Every structure is written in C-alpha cells, then in structure tokens.
Amino acid sequence: MNITGLLISVILLIIVLMLIFWLRTPDGISQTSSKTSTNPKKPDGKIPDDDLTLVEGIGPKIRSLLYQAGIHSFQDLSEKKPFELQEILHKANIHIASPDTWAEQAQLLAAGKMDELKRLQENLKGGRRG
Image (cartoon, rainbow, N blue to C red; front, top):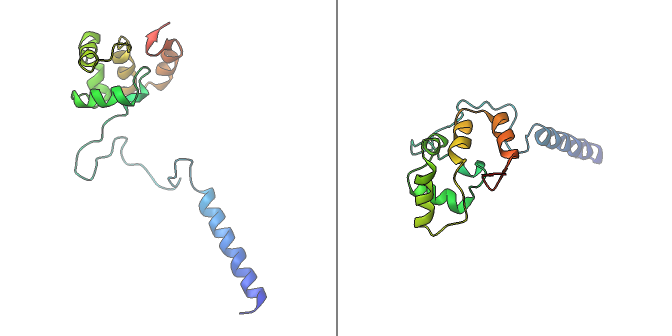
C-alpha cells in the first residue's frame, strides 16, 4: 500500500469514529436505539428498584434502608405515612432526616410530573419545607 492509500484509510477511519462519537448521547446510549419500556425488567425477570435518591432528603444510605424495609418504588414510598418512614429511620439511628414530604415527592415521581416535582423541590431544604 502506498502512502496515499494509507492516508485515505486513516482519514476514513477518523470520519467513522467521529460519526460514532457524534451519534452517542451523554449517557452513552445511541440516539438511534429505541427504549421499549420506561421500567425494563432485569435479566432475572424482576423490575429494577426506582432510584429513591431523586426524592429531596433521601441519600444513598437512606435509600438502602428503604429498600431493606421493602420500599422499592416511588409508588411504594408514596403510600407511606411520615411516621412509618420516621420509624424506619429511628431503627437505623438516623434522627436528622425528615420524611414529611417524601411521599408527596414520590407521588409526583410515580406520576411522571417532573415539572411539579421541580417546583416543590425548589422550596425544600433536605426534604423539609423552608
């Protein structure tokens, strides 16, 4: 292969790589792929847990406690009373968190009302009304 053929091959390779990079979204999923479900099943057939940390006031540690208590979805969380959630926290010796708005936030998440959730969370600090 002569130098011209090599140069053309390198240029084509660069173009292909640039196209691949350009077609990718920030989360690494191709824009051409389609999502068939908003909550796809895991390989074992189970529906994955919702990310409860989307609720203002819930971090990774509290999320784990809620999962252990059988609260795996926004719907599960939306059905809990603040005193029930407070009991879970107290058993884990967590006294600083306030679950007063968690069910309300989870209800908005379960319904996909992200704009309403954002407005609510703008008025919260650590899950508490300010």
